[in-house]
Amino acid sequence: MKEQIKKFLNEEQDPKAIDKISNKLEDLLMKNEEVGYIGVQKKPVTVFPDSIVLTNKRIIICKPKNLGFSMEFVDYNWDSISHTFVNESILGSEFSFTTKTDLTISIDYLPKIQARKIYTFAKEQLDELKTKTAEPLETVFQAQIVESIAEEIPKERTEDVVEEIDTEEVTDFAEIVPVSLSGYRDEKQFPDVNQETKESGLSHLSQDELFEKLQNYKKLLDNGLIMQGEYDALKKEVLSHM
Image (tube, rainbow, N blue to C red; front, top):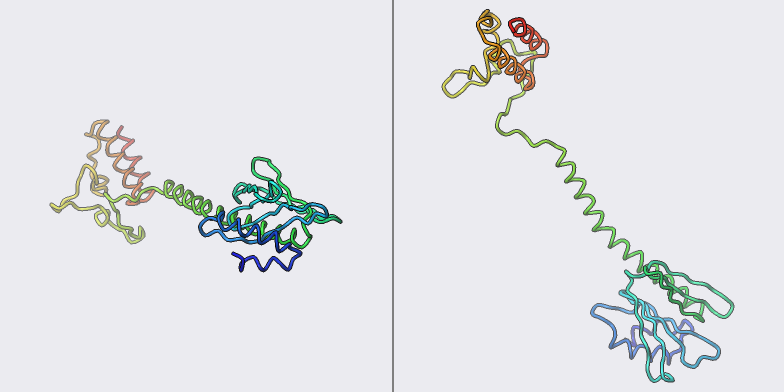
């Protein structure tokens, strides 16, 4: 610990105050917690100055009690802090921060170089926290977009797959009407359109049968098996017998 805080001693720090705080911090630091900066008040009269310790996990305010024989520690995690501020004056600088519960904590009479270093370190920690928080949210947002798009895309039909055929090359509906395993087309589901148009056997059909044939023609049109003009002609033929 003492080797780690030697870098602060050339910034108008009180070596005795730093040494005293470091001894206390050895028992306070959590696992994987590292001290980033330590600032000590420099009042003209105060014998026992307050201190502020910034780590990679929190801000710790250190206040001596009982003539310096004990010390009070109050800490604030970085995720509970919303803003940080620094104000410079003739007698020194004041560093303050505001929590998300609108609580403002400040420590004054800091040497200017210390206050600037504290402010910079605090901004770095808050920016890093925002980045870590934004990454999971972005991942969730992207997952929601993918899920919503997947819901809008209709599921592929696996039961009746119709092979795409250039309609200009089709000269006979027999080329595109599926054939059953027995070698014959299902007359109810896929009627032979050419034979029906050649024969004038629609007149003997009932209204329900004519309506069923009209539905079958519509299925052929929806599946791309006949052209719109062909469907219109068939539809007109059926309607003339209804």
